[in-house]
Image (cartoon, rainbow, N blue to C red; front, side):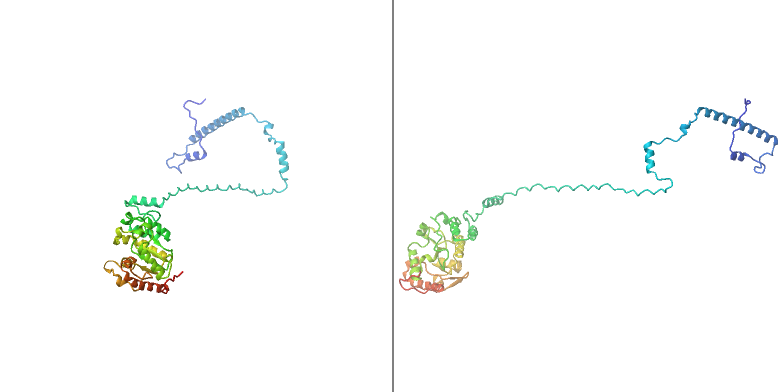
Length: 369
């Protein structure tokens, strides 16, 4: 039993106890050594130590009772399965043999999976069909609708309605047949409303000489052939009896392809509209010598107009050159029918043309084949 008011001194570690030991030498304020006090302190410390040992011993006994001692079997090493023992006996090297270092482990990388193939290029959608090109005539109509101007005729079967149309269509004709067809549809001047038919030409497609009159007459308008009346008969005599050539070997045409009413003189507008037809006709026939008949045809073929117009007396009995061709003007057969005495002057002009063609005057009744 502990006395009332007794407090068990708390055990401290050696350093703690040592730190609490003081002496006058270390602490001037500590009191001087008291043997009684030191003895009492030692006795108290000894008693506390004994009680501490008894308390620790009682605790150790209680712990030993609660723990069951292990059996020998439990302390024996655990048994190894037979299979493991056999495997160990076969694979384990002898104790005396040195342990070989483990073989270097070869790490085989997994097969490399190739990257996925790029997606196939996307096929573009099919292009829209090209807009259908309308026929030329529809194109002309569409253009005219957009611009508000009347359509220009094509060089096919559309008629020429202006000098510009005549020039364009005539230039596009590659032969006399297409040119003749284009002339037959011409509506470029007012004569298209009064004619019976167009009068294109007479003779072969190629000829050394081309006779050119001013315009068709009544008989020509009815038959569609130039120089078929009385004037035509006189021209045939000049060709066959004077030049000694069949009429079928020479080409005959007019400046105008339509007959002026009442056989009047052609107007400047009518001449200007019809000129591209004649120009293209001359190019296709390609004669060596041109023989214009009469004042109107002679001035036109020579390119004379207005104040430059000249009389037949100043134009004939000479050879003119224009566009690389020889031009020999002479009287119109109609004038010769009215003025027979002028035939000898016409004969002089024809002889000039024959000289250019390498022809000699023929004796009466002789004709060249």
